[in-house]
Image (cartoon, rainbow, N blue to C red; front, side, top):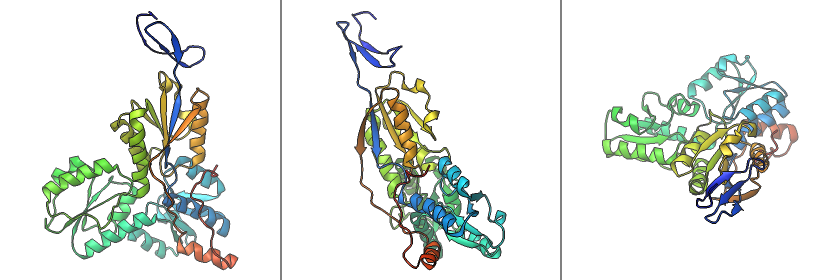
Length: 359
């Protein structure tokens, strides 16, 4: 490199970054990782996963789970090895067997199907999703048109819409607003899927309100605290990062949103990976700062794997970026707590709030 030019390069032998100055001096550039906090498991996911683990311990395998308990490949595979059987439909569960409903919730029709097959049901729906279900029922009873902002076909949206199918219209995003019609513009309310991008949801709401000025807001925020906190951390990190690695599965709505938020707020590149071995070393070329976070259904053990991988490429300085503190815990489903108490004579197991031990 000419001494009259300055810039960055990658050492061919060491993989280390260097900087050439005007005088031709070469100085090392410190590599670092910005590690988001909070990240990973939220209270609803923790509750759902522990529900399956406790059910397997209490009843013995197999225990059936309708849909993936949470949207994470590692979690599902691990629970399968322990004896959980994941099915797409209630009809796949043998009559009289135990079935767990996933954290994303189900429509009333699914409960009816389970009763018809004499299934023992355990409802692991996240309480924050259940809150949205209750809102849908309440406003449908008052004959409102309900504009449900969310991804068509996502299990959470299917479950919420199923509470009041005659009243609910799914709105996927700002581009759908022009085609939305309601019966009475004075009786309209919007609700949302809990795992959406906060910014995109608010843009959709803004456009809906232009079209329906009397549209009401939900009684409380529908996008869950964990989704908002994880996005907030990424928004703070993104301008300082050359690369954002989000640990999460591709069918995880909140994990996909984290990549989108990172790019929107300034990171040069963002990638979603299930495991550390999916990281392409070429992504690290010329990169000084790597941001790392994980979706709300990701156990911490997977994040540790990513940090170990990055350390092998010289990114050993890990700096936390704390956007919020979380202390929310949900109790286990009442059906499971009842059976655990009957067996032990005491209180049911407590949740651990972090599933780093799930491996």
